[in-house]
Image 1 (cartoon, one colour):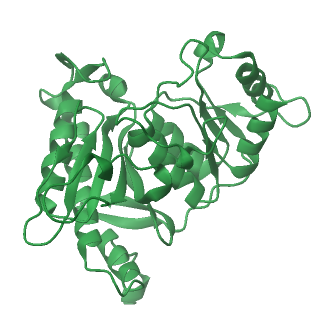
Image 2: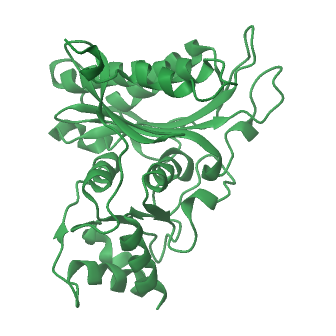
Length: 333
């Protein structure tokens, strides 16, 4: 039996990658282990939600003004508790929390800050549509002694050292943007391990799919409507196929693997759009750019947007490099 033929587990892969960085301390591997564990726990509960008491709403609203599903609350608590226990995280920001969690260092300074959307697409839970967890990791910039600071979280996405998502669907897949590219790992439920299944993901420059909520087209600016209408009914190339789930992590995952473009633009009355810069758009932008694609607000690269507050919103357009370039040309011509 050729042991080298066995696909690597997530931790084997990260540990091997870490050897290329002589200054590495092992803290990043510990962080990835914590993120993987949290997503495994959330995946288990998502897949069994209908058998327990985790379907439905809690009756309260989060800082965004959105009604909180029970699984939102469970996923948030799981992420917070698991990351806190790693000992390598100095600050945590969550879409579900009004203020950040600032953590003291134990014996060694905690070198990372993490922001996340614990359960993206939670309005789809009750109808068994794919949902997911999105996260971004920054290197600490506050003084290493003491607790982490807000400045550790309020960094432009260009400074992310890692970003990723877990999609909970027909299988559970964890996708990570690391220093050596974007890689996908599928959860083997028999082993309880993530196994490398999508090495070195590269998004095609041009795809045959487009994805947007055309139910909102009456709210878009004329420029955005013109651009997306051209993807809907191209004048000079074969027609494309519309694919829209309504769960960012599911739509982004399909776009990353199959190509095309996903757009959640701003609206005339809400020019900053709906999606959160730090919890959703920034991590997705890093993933797509690291995979050879592009990510824009429609005016500037997502990665270069400077956050002002933890819950800043932004328009988001992600996809293959040629498709995003075409979108920008159509919007600005």
